[in-house]
Image (cartoon, rainbow, N blue to C red; front, side):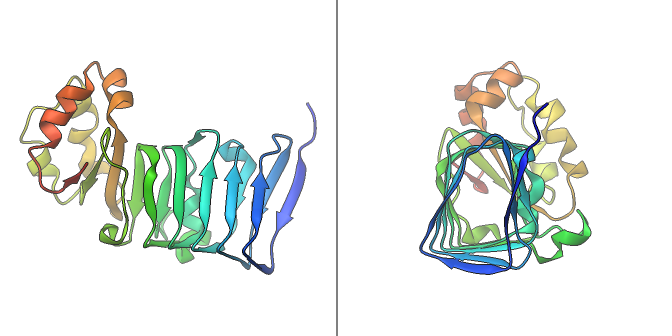
Length: 208
């Protein structure tokens, strides 16, 4: 197995630059003490190749060229006024200090995901009203824990209700929003996107 090269981007402030994080044979370390402003960051690596160690992103654009799956380390980042494009699956953003010691400075505010495709992604410990979420066929459940009883009061398509909605109480307490991609959830739980749409339209606290 080939050794991966460590690429350290730390202890600096970068403005108005383009960063290409696309080498499959590299481990990219962002931080500590890293601040990026008005930068474009192209990502084309898997989650294990992207290590966030406390970085601040202000008014940056993220272009995700390869689906980024199960990347919880966004909770180690401070994100303000950033835009995301591409596929994000199982990613967590925001403030979740119980996740680990390094997560206490994580935050997200005024960010735009309207050009992203999100599935199973969470906004943690931050105000989701400042976030622009992707439109249908994505849908975002706001305050999923506080509204778990209401969400369980209707029949959801396929096995989605029994697997996902019934378990909303078990989400981490800071979970403020949950975003899903209807076609992926329909395929996973034996349903159709149209069946999801019919249920989603019943709730005024679901963004779609």
